[in-house]
Image (spheres, rainbow, N blue to C red):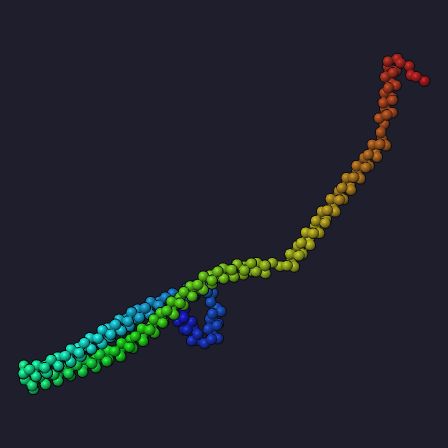
Length: 237
């Protein structure tokens, strides 16, 4: 991720912002960035191991050269001691002691160079360890950021879809439809009331007609008179 954005912003801040604006999937971009950082971490760990190996080798070489220098010093001293005991001729002893001291000086110089290299490698190791630690922290931070980003993207998509649906609703047509429905209800209510009035009016007229045409009483009287005649009963005056 770090290297990605470094490369990205090399093209200029304005152009980089334009590129970012066109990015359609920040989740995939972040995941790719994390993969890049993990790749960088792997390379840094490999480099760290190699430099540490060189540092260890330099320290071992320094100790080895110091040991050789001390060994040559001891040999030169031993040769001179043997010359004093007449075990070796004086001239031969001086020659051999001188050769031993030359070897000692060479070993001492090699020890100095190895120590310098060892210090350089130690500095490189410290720098690489710092870089590795920084990459690890960045990976951890961006993995946490990715979790948050996924949640934010999920919420933003849901919000966008809802807002889009709301934006696609024509408020004026909706109000107009509601007004028409309201008018239709009023019309249906008025029609129902009208039918009720008509029904009540029809019922009242039928009642008036039935009352006016009610001959049940007179018909019963006539039938009674006829029955008495048939039975021979005289009609009372």
